[in-house]
Image (cartoon, rainbow, N blue to C red):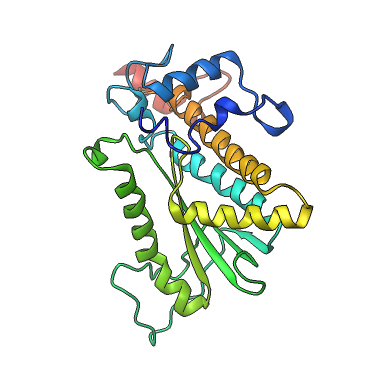
Length: 268
């Protein structure tokens, strides 16, 4: 219940069901969202995951089989980029970082990969000519690895990990600023993420002569709905089938005439 009460977690419940904004849920999605919110089992949810583990809401939101965790991340990334385009310049998704010369000494935990990329870059968020890089993480706070840890500590830890990996490189090599954008699967967000979105909301409100609270409310709800829809896909979506003895379609003879390998199988 603590996660359900987190700021921003209940935005989908109070949002008007406007189809054009992506706020409308069908009855199955609405029921599923309530089950996820209160920890109830979702109807028609498979008992076992294709990875072999017992299936549950918590497992389905951390299991990497099927690519749903990456899909969730990318949807949030694209939503943030769209928001930044309203007020910033040169918004780029997955910008490649400048290679590191031997002259620079970064911290031991920093990412020094030659073609390292971050999730979003933009110019003008914090100051007119300042370039800012963002890296996004959406974590599930009910995962077993986070047991007995407070939500506040989890936010801080994920922000610290992102900064350790990229902040020094972005500051020294790119001469830019870095913001870790940390969200939970329940729709909450870390302090630095909230400050960045509040900054964007303020600039959009000023540009469009809109009320700041309305703009911030829309941004929060938009991101919350993106996370909610991808969470529902993770819980209900197909993760493929267990490995069987079927041949790949690339090796199938569509006229049903067996090939040499098929004849060997028949003889055996």
